[in-house]
Image (tube, rainbow, N blue to C red; front, side, top):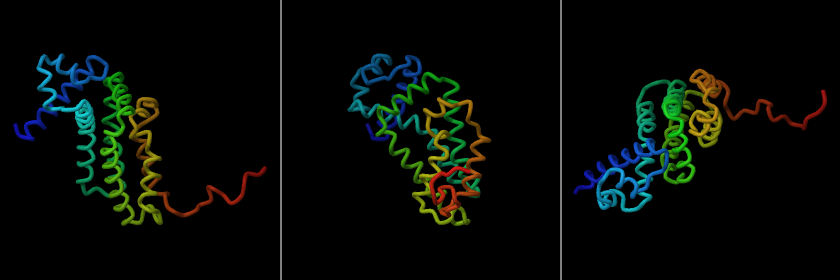
Length: 208
């Protein structure tokens, strides 16, 4: 069996595991997956030699739609402001719809993400890499003046955190909207720079 064949089987079993999790409302391991599918454990072990391999495959399948959205946005010729908004809003819309359609399963994935964060790290790093490209494009047009790319990256991620963190989407769902996110992106493009505009002040607080 070729590596491509095994990869296809991995993806199929990972999707089966996710469907089982949605039905059962609990995490699935290799033994449970084999039993529920009614197949020999050896077939599962061929695709996932270690228990962690199944977790990695499930993580990959969960992130796949989000990666597809990011790739689609990055391939466009939109101006930087519009491109950055789409970069965030399309992922937010996906996760919001996932949450609304099945809150219990969504929260199960959040709990798994907290326990197995290391498997999600590469996808988060890729999103940051794409965002750095967007920041560079924006700076080429005069935005985010004077900021190092990594500083701009940190500031932007902190500003839109509640639209890209699943647990925050679940926590404050009704307070989030595409319109509010657009205002945030506009504010970043219109005002974020390295200039000191007086927010920190020079002295401590004093009575009026």
